[in-house]
Image (cartoon, rainbow, N blue to C red; front, top):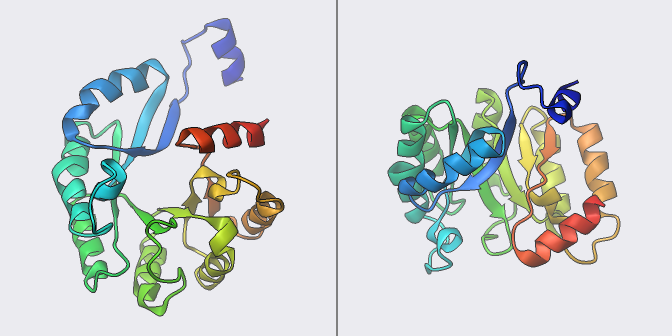
Length: 223
């Protein structure tokens, strides 16, 4: 019905609009350019995820802290406070940080509404996804109901992710980029991911793509 109204140009009974579940923010001032474009595209709400410097600028010897917390506290959180109806702030964690659970709880108290995990990205993979040191974090997220946007290269780390999901069935997990199943020759990956999602109703994917190569492969997969 909403699609019919859109096609007919009837704006009198609009639903909430599009929710963009995955954006990075270099600096809070960049919203001056992003928000008008998002509004024009019908995006009513945007999840902005905290990011390390390696993601934002391609630089930084340390892919984790302290740049992760700096981006959340200096850019993402202020953006959400300035635009509370449009920006949803997600913090992030460095699995190698011995104080990661305390950092997470601190950021939740400050206003984080969810968590972005980079630990399944090949550039950030430092420990296995089901490493015992992450158990307190997963348990906390499961207990609080905080959603997790988790970049996981499913072709490489499927077994590890499956074990985490099986052990924490109430963990709300959103896998971006189709779980990276659409990049390159990964026959059978989407089928396995679909089975995981059917078995675990708290596992979702987003359809964000990214770099040009991933973008083109992603469009082919959608087609």
